[in-house]
Amino acid sequence: MSRFLLVVPPLVGHVNPLVGVAAALTARGHTVAWAGLPELVTQLAGEDAEVFPCAVPPLAPHRPPELRGPAALKFLWQEFLVPLAEAMAPDVVTACHRFRPDVVVADQQAVAGALVAERLGLPWATSATTSAEFTGALDGMPLVAAWVREQLDRLRERLGTPTTGTDPRFSPALVLAFTTAELAGRPTGAGTGRVRFVGPSLAARPTSAAFPWQWLDPARATVLVTLGTANTDAGAAFLTVCRNALQARSDRVQAVIVDPAGALSDLPPNPDLLALPAVPQLSLLPRTAAVVCHAGHNTVCEALWHGVPLVVAPIRDDQPVVAHQVAETGAGVRIRFGRTDADRLGRAVDAVLDDPAHRDAARRIGASFRAAGGASRAADHLETLAATDPPPTASTQESR
Image (cartoon, rainbow, N blue to C red; front, side, top):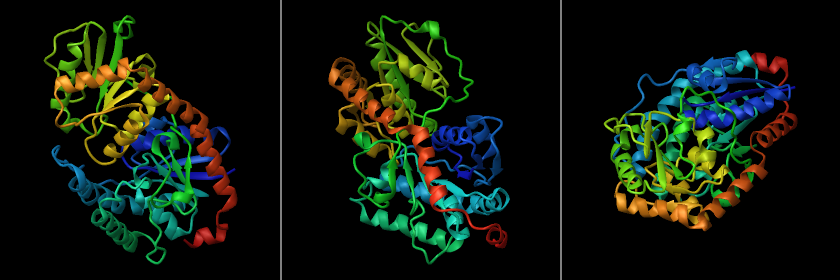
């Protein structure tokens, strides 16, 4: 049996896909440990998860909600991803010495995992929670792409093996893509030959979010509105637009709006609209007719897994890429996040509810997800990597 160390950033959407993979590996008799933020990992993977604590930057940066495009990407790297890698690296080294993994699985945004594994001579795989990095997202922005490469080269000089030249976002052995070609298209960027489409890794997740299931009216379509866990600062105006558009359709629609910041806290009790700080999303989606969201990769894939069409309003980062994928496949309608009024949003919701082509496309992609194998298929690939590239001998490991 093999030992797998999962290195993750302190981001819910980047931990969740590996929760199912960890469970699949453990069920097969392998030993799994995590390197990350213990309170987040145990919240999502369970209290029994073995976690090697990793430092994170002292303060999470506040990214101005109006920051979009290349400026938002540069902010993300300068203020979060680079400091995160530098903070995590010493603790990832410690985790490798103590746990002695046969394979390191590094999230694309936890590049310390890749750089440390590379430095220690350990086989490593990439966990790609979004397809944006290998579908040419920066093809039209060569200066931005060159700037990102420069940040990675500098990180390698400080944390990794400067002479290798490997992009730490793409393992030379295995890139696990938690999507399928039916949604993402064929890879066109770096690491193309190493990408293995495994589809979403959905696993039962603990949640403290209560939900009044009796509130749902089976005679009306339920529309879920969510902007994920990282866009609270940007969402108040958009959620208000959603409220107005969906209430105007209360004769046939019920709205569930995820509102963690309380932007709609002034709402009185309403049989047509429910605003909650959190919802049990995986349990709610099978009862949902449409989802309005920011095109976050996890939310999109979870909706499509259940054959639910989408209205996508991307904000920044990989979201425009994912929104383009949704629109291109016909599984939803794309709108402008910052320039959408209630009329435009309402017409988009009408389209995904009334045109069966959108639901058919969503179901087709959902079928491709299930056929891809999810966590079980990812575990297959990791087992193959462990068997193909055996760990160093005990004496070699001790010398590290």
